[in-house]
Amino acid sequence: MDKISVAAARQAEAIGRQVTLQGWIRTRRDSKGGFSFLELNDGSSQGNIQVIADASLANYESEIKHLSAACSVTVRGEVKPSGGKGQATEVLASEVIVHGWADAENYPLQKKQHSFEKLREWAHLRPRTNTFGAIARVRNCVSRSIHNFFQEEGFLYIHTPIITASDCEGAGAMFRVSTIDPAKPPLKEGQIDYTQDFFGRPAYLTVSGQLNAEIFACALGKVYTFGPTFRAENSNTSRHLAEFWMIEPEMAFYELTDNMDLAERFLKRVFRDALDQCGEDMQFFNDRIDDTVISTLDAIITSSFERVSYTDAIDILAKSGRKFEFPVAWGTDLQAEHERFLTEEHFKRPVVLYNYPRSIKPFYMRVNDDEKTVRAMDVLVPKVGEIIGGSQREERLDVLQTRMDEQHLKAADYWWYTELRRYGTVPHSGFGLGLERVIQFITGMQNIRDVIPFPRTPGNAEF
RNA sequence: UCCCCUGUAGCUCAGUCGGUAGAGCAGCGGACUGUUAAUCCGCGUGUCGUUGGUUCAAGUCCAACCGGGGGAGCCA
Image (cartoon, rainbow, N blue to C red):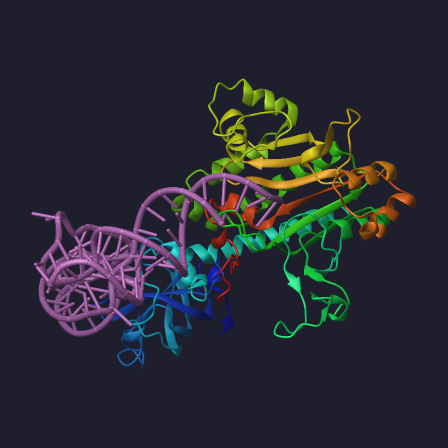
């Protein structure tokens, strides 16, 4: 008697097989005809398998008639064509073993829709719902697709450090990593003496693997990282997490246009894989979460992204006739409302904005010949906003040092970074992609806290 | 961090002018020839977020705090 998944048992090819299924009851319906319908799910697919449990089973009255949502069971029986509508197959049980009960009066999840806010309070139970099962499967699919894409393109997967001693990566506030006893820290002239800390200096959780990835790109060509990233910003929005997963490719001998080409090809591949490999889950999102997700992804896969320079974007916004809360002016960063107008209303598709003013972008972005702009690029998508941020990196040592001076950074802190430009420097580029924002875009989920298993946000780390 | 909204039964919510809290769903019991969010009948449920204040009387008014949501900033 083969142990198979619910997903396999739902296929018509399984008809006639004697099988063992293991999973959790979603619901039970009794028939006065003397048997019960059990809906069984094991996480392998969105749909359940319908199990027919006849009253002739030894434990029918004592156990089966008391099964409720979340009870765990082993079912043995034969896969048969379903006698009812709605499914191809069902399992006629010859044995039902109950492993764990779930008191229906106290079990929080009910056979109805719960709000996502309430489910966040039950993060230990929410993977048992249709929506969070689907999100977990799509997230897995996207992760696999990301690795497949880069591996097939000849990229090396590099593991960059989680702990960094550089407090000046410039991407935002950082979490301190320390073994100092906060109750009695070692002091030196009234200040905490970090030379006595674990690393002999202040250390933090990484906000980006980029600078480390550049080291490997400048030796091995094309590399990527895929790992957790930490930002200690007090951000309270539907698009920000204190701990999130980021993918950062970094490529030697790539100019900005190569970078854009890669980003576009990459996103399309991930979107296509989600549609091809998670059909049932994507249909669920389309039916229950956002009825535009499938058509939107389909349209993106078959069309090209709009590429607009920052300067042209300012022009479009200025001539739009639209009243914005924040004024549009060359030299200031675009506001969320500006980005939304461009991607959701003006172009109605993903937009790659590039060549931003040098004054609003980090020191490592390559300065253009006009001396006023740098080769930065942001990929914006409707509803989610910025999904990718990247640039061509400044490979000229003298310009890099000028830029660090401009932004009041100490060259000594970046000695190893600048040495990459001193010895065999190359033009190179890369970008950062927020995994959760991609999942949000694909699934239509509105809050980023619902597309990561255990969200970390200010004041929230319960699970 | 700022602006706005919000907190009442396990869940979703109603609660009028300040007068001592009630619907649906879930659950339980029963009915029902194979059901699909089954349907029908019956039954229960409360630290009204917390603390303080006003008042004869506070779910209701006021203040502070805590939690949740939306928007903004920071970004991915």
